[in-house]
Length: 209
Ligand code: AP5
Image: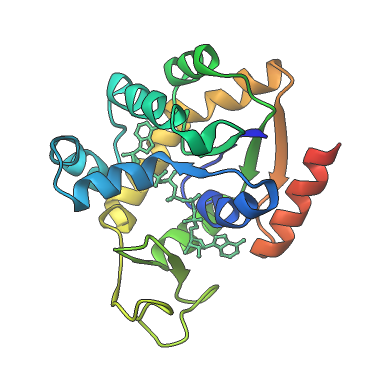
C-alpha cells in the first residue's frame, strides 16, 4: 500500500500513521521526523534546517525531495509506505509522481480550534519521537515518557507564533494539494475529530472502498 497522509499541522497524521503502519505492514516515513533526527544528530542537513523548523516555515523543495527520494530507495519501502508530511507543495507532489505511484491520499479533516488545542498540548519524547497530549493522551507519569523514562518536551514549533505561521504556510502551500489529488481520484477525506482508534477505523473502512 502506497499512502500519503495529508492534513493541517496537528490533525493527527503522525498519531494515526504510528497505528496504520502495523495494519498495512509498511514503514511510517515522516519528513518532519527525518528533519528532527538530523537536527538532533547535528548533521549538515540538521544545521541547515534547524531554524526553518523552529519558525514553522517549509524546508526548500529541492532538499526535501532528495531526502524522500533516498528514503524511498531503502529496502523497507519496497512493498509500500505511509508518507506523513510529504508532499507539502505542488512541486513536491509532481516530484513524487515521478518517483512512485500512489494507492490513496488520506486527507485528515479537523477544525482550526481543535488543531490549536492539539498542538499546544502536545508533548514529545526527544529520543524516540513518541507523542503525547497533556489532556487527550497523557503519559502514565506527568512529563515523563512511558517507556524510556525521559522528560517530555514541547516542540519549538508548537509555541504560539510558530503554530500561527505553520497554519498560514499550510493554507498557502499545502491545502492546494487537496484539489490536486481530488482531481486525480486519489483523495480520501477522513474526519480526524474522533479518538485515534476511531479515526484509524474510519480510515481503514474508507480505504477498503
Ligand atoms: P511535521 O512534523 O510534519 O509537522 P506537521 O505537519 O505540522 O504535523 P505535526 O507533526 O505537527 O502534526 P500531526 O498531524 O502529525 O499530529 P500528531 O499526530 O502529532 O513537520 C515539521 C516541520 O518540518 C515543518 O513545519 C517544516 O518546517 C518541515 N517539513 C516537514 N515536511 C516537510 C516538507 N514536505 N516540505 C518542507 N518542509 C517540511 O498529533 C498532534 C497532537 O494531537 C498530539 O499531541 C496527539 O497526541 C494529539 N492527537 C492526535 N490525534 C488525536 C485524536 N484523534 N484525538 C485527540 N488528540 C489527538
